[in-house]
Length: 264
Image (tube, rainbow, N blue to C red):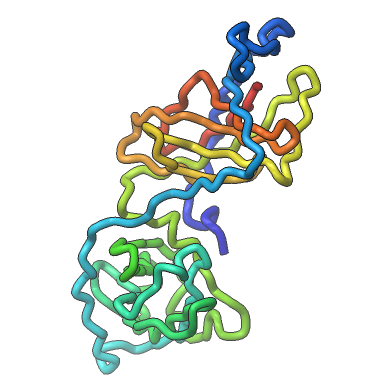
């Protein structure tokens, strides 16, 4: 299960930046890294380690386990914690299912340092079929609350989910630390037939030097911001060129999906 299930599909906004000239592809006279018409290049022999800081200072919500006698149905759900969050898992972790802010399931963690699971007995009534179910995870290590809205009718079907095959939602998409999530898709332009290898290239979104999103070329990923007007810098690590291209134009993280052609 990935973040596409939790985001509304909307028309893509394409930002096409102008083409570079041959003269612009030459190195600067000062002997530094070359500057291109649409980006600045910095040599790097190593793949950059870009990561969004998901740590916060949030207190764990005071969830209370539901009284089973008050509900008609029960569904067993086993959630495997997203791999990226496993290193921060502690005994203070909590997983809950909420309907209209009412706790319908509550669980502590199980597993080991490689795989962490939460088993949830989700309780509900027949008239809950049209309600949104919020799957909430509190990370003890990050002190951060993550919340995802499940698709309608996902729960209360009197069946078991996540036992035979892993049910591992992308909780980072539901981070409550950031108010706005913007879906970004970056594709490299092939100006002057510049070599790219999208299987090993990397894209990063930065706000004032802080990483707010990381992804692969051609593949949608999420960039986080505190408002829908925050300006962000786009960086592209090119494996074949062994360096990082930083776009001269900034993008605005509006919350609306964006498709960007990165012209070198």
